[in-house]
Image (cartoon, rainbow, N blue to C red; front, side):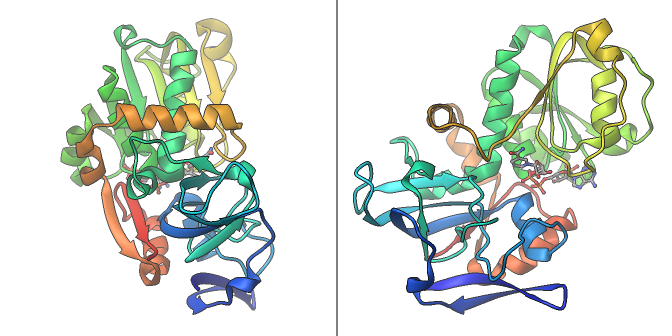
Length: 325
Ligand code: NDP
């Protein structure tokens, strides 16, 4: 089988497409013929070596995939069935989706919802799954479309793009923050009402600022997240899922104790099975058909290392779908 293999040489990561015997696949109950995978921020960190994502080499990266079951010892899955996987450390500490086959635990797989095909499932991938988790966190925080504007940061990226499309379709008024003014047209076509420049948000904020947002989805972290917290409406909810701008959070307790602001963390890796199924069903039913064309570029396995470098350089817009077969 063909696979993108990561090897470590003198502290450098080598990423090359190689032919590997499928006998080398790790233990697992279900072997899947992978048809589609995708490129996420974490994949790019792993493939470029810019983040310490992978600790044991050689490793096949790819934190998500969609494909057909080739063989299964798990009674819940039958050969030929379409499945999707995100998270569980696949592509980090267990060989992942950037290969023609993957062998995993049946506990990690989701039967593909009937409204999705495998390609669409990977246009969404981990980023889309996480965007839906963030939107659900706002809903669970009681944020309703009538309450006011919702801010989405890292807007041109995979999570940001999907979050904008989901929120707009659900009737929320969305403001996007982007570092790329040439993406304004793209972000508005996804449903953003307004696009603010990221450069407006680089200063350390005051503990409390003018109340602007009923909800926020943040993929960036650091000072930008701190500023958003200071600008939340009374009772607002922020779903924080990312660190594209840094992992620190230089904030104060003021938004929490004086404005009743809720900061909800989002983890997509260990989401329990019933919530995973609910997330996929909702993604399949909310997103308009147009989203899948607007937000996608498709590449081949051989093109993944260059795309990973481009993603780290903030040169990719939307989602990058990887055609495996
Ligand atoms: P992308 O690279 O697709 O998007 C990130 C976006 O962030 C970019 O498009 C850019 O948008 C913005 N950005 C990039 N660099 C910076 C910077 N230095 N400062 C501020 N903004 C920046 O990544 P994903 O959408 O796949 O992931 C986004 C984040 O969410 C990542 O940190 C990722 O690790 C995290 N994540 C977390 C998950 C979880 O389970 N918690 C799951 C999935 C992702 P623009 O140019 O428009 O400003």
